[in-house]
Amino acid sequence: MNQKRYLDKTALPITATCWHSARAVTPNKKAMMPTSLKTNNKNPYSMKKFLLYLMIQVFLLLSGMITSRAQTTLSAGDIVLLAFNGDGEYSTGITQDGFSFMPLVNLEAGTEIYFTEIGWSDLANAFIYSTEINDQMVKYTAPTPIAAGTIIRNDEMNTNGFTAYSSNTTYTTAFFEVFNNGNGTGEELLVFQGSRATPTFIFAVSHRPAGWETNVPAGGVTTGDGSALPPGLINDVTCFIFSPR
Image 1 (cartoon, rainbow, N blue to C red):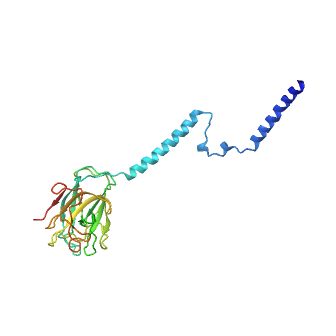
Image 2: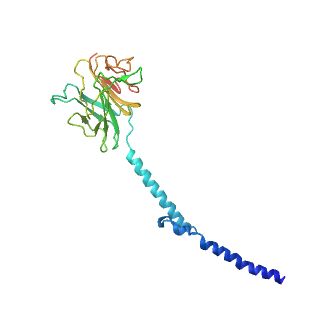
Image 3: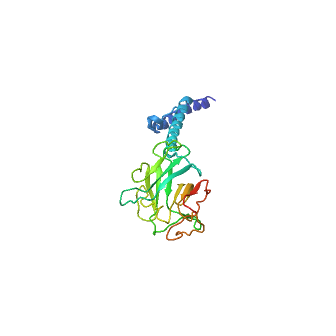
């Protein structure tokens, strides 16, 4: 019995010595951590503060991303076209082609709206593409919050917020260089959000004698001219024909 007790007593310091030795050669992981990430696992309050700090940082990051991408999503009729002029000639600089529009809802800063004289093909379910016509698309990006009822003009002298977006030829101006509504063939102006490939139409006007046409091919009725009624719009409600019929 005495021998058993002696062995038990001598076993304790041996075991303890090995344990302390292991700790002596093991890297202090807590000491290697950055100061901002050190926590005291034995103190639940420190861990809670650390988790709260991470949550706040993630929230601020996401808030910044959401704010930077915020824009107003428009429905048909939220924008109205008030006027457009196609009697000007870009080369002479006398009376420039242009248009005016007005939002009927408030626009958040960064809201993007597209305007184009390129017609719509109901057969191709896409914008007409033809190099025979000098048609363009311009994009308006609200530089600041815009109140409903604000009239916004686009022409050579008024391009604030406007940029070139797309063209069937080589035009890269932030305004329409050739907007022919007084040359006998007429013109259309379509308003949309989204992209050229996937537009959501907001408003439209036509100054063509034929108005909105049907069975418009992908290349236009004649050398790129003409336009079908843009999908989602209702004639005399969210789109209009100004030319005599």
